[in-house]
Image (cartoon, rainbow, N blue to C red; front, side, top):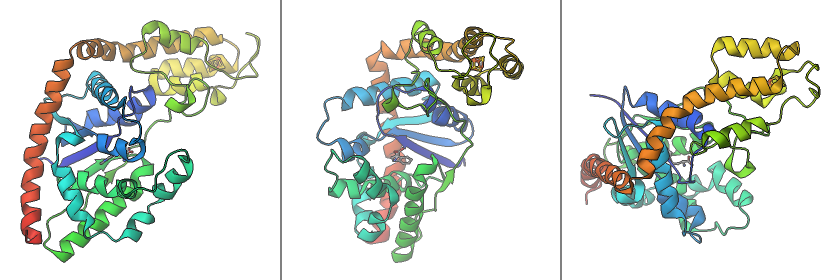
Length: 326
Ligand code: TRP
Ligand code: SF4
């Protein structure tokens, strides 16, 4: 029996290289060894964006398209949309009965997000319950491992606490899921800050060849390297930061030396990066165009995924109901 991996993402729309190398490349590897469940967390999106749902459907669809383009394989992984699997909601309500409110109030993201997203009224029941819904997402499959970023560790800790409390109150139903932390490369954006949708510094999987080159061409470099003859410091240059993730070793070395000795120019350096990135993106572009143009193909994959997910989730729920005495 393969061990189970589960992870989800809120539907933030199209994915950039930071999402790709931070999460998806890892998911892609995991699907080779584990039984994987990957879902688009559309209910979680509602917890902060309940007042603006006009682009929700499109964002869910674009996320699925990008996942498939990135190489998640529906023959290997179960890929689905959270709201297609109502079992998550049933477990959520059952877990809510045994969850002390202070456990939720002390999850760091609760107060942080309320501070950060001041323009939204987040004094809602659903927003407080965000991490508990996440616990239900995980426990409803008895997942062994959850690949997540460091910011999600408190949510996983809560999930383990809830699992223990349930097992103690009723019967030992749930294993305690473990985080799968991998060393993610830091992906700089075109301005040198962390790549992020909200900084407008991102390179998207959906960017065309021309757009990618335009973004690289105009990328900031070592600001002290003004003339071609000025030596530069690759360590402070985001172009080098991207080389380190996407270029082969010998090119990285040539950039490092060439930059410090003014042996290469920035445009040449960016052209090399463009070559490496294009090579990485080509298969993604190819798959992406296929999925983007075939709405019913993507819909079919999500529906088949939901069916498989529901089978797995409903057998766990049967145990849960019996353990509680429903
Ligand atoms: N909260 C996660 C995030 O913001 C998304 C998520 C929802 C998730 N449910 C999950 C991640 C279950 C892992 C497991 O990234
Ligand atoms: Fe950056 Fe490359 Fe120019 Fe050096 S040569 S400053 S690494 S773009």
